[in-house]
Picture (cartoon, helix red, strand yellow):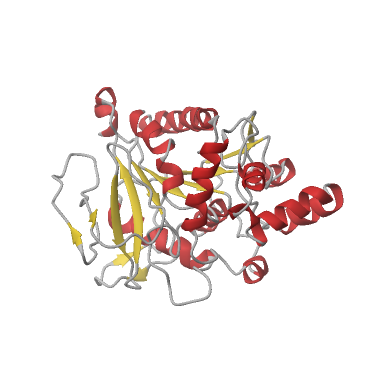
Length: 348
């Protein structure tokens, strides 16, 4: 894994069927004033991008001895991409332990300007192209098997852009080796994802059909009122049954996670919709929450139609499916799909 100054980097022995990694122990000041404490079995790593900036990666390898043989077959690694106001920690809380226990090596990325990643010298963290390119660089250099890419909310839109560009013409790498601009994937999972046309349709539907909800969403996200109002944060991201103490913890982490906007939304919307998927055999799972306050059912259905798959609606869970109080519902649905995908791959 790429290095950073002021890190202690002991070697981790290479094991059959896994990516060689380097553990990185953070010795500098945290960028987040409320740093996320890793769980047992998790490592914080930094991947150095071609720009020279460092991208935070939280890593947890398969931890179930019964799944060891499975890991050495064709089980794909999982690479998780967060959305706005989040970072790699949102996956590390529940889903990294869950999927690692079920036989999958897991990598959660913090996009530039988010979490403990470096920030570019710009007004916003990046574009669809640059964020997807950073993910592609990480996969190309650090992941040996084609992974499944999972994206949440605006992270799902980044994943869609990546998927649309798999197989782009090769470019000359810095190491003078030919490489694909976007390495192959084993599949993609879109979790409460912004649809391929962007969030404009969501906004207009809310304005005409749910004006009060539209006002709340705009105040919560555009004006960042979720950072100061616990009830609004809860209504925006979580189920009503979520404990206020947990909401407060995540509110603090979300506030600290995003030091700069993920996108310039005007420029983003002008670049949409994302291109059509070229390979009809490529596997995509579209999964959303019936209690989602941000991405409505029509938005989820639009994404499903775009990829020609029926969307999966999870009952009793909200937009932040991976850290909601009912997080297991979405995790188990995705695991079932992943295991089916892995079964199909091993039979090829």
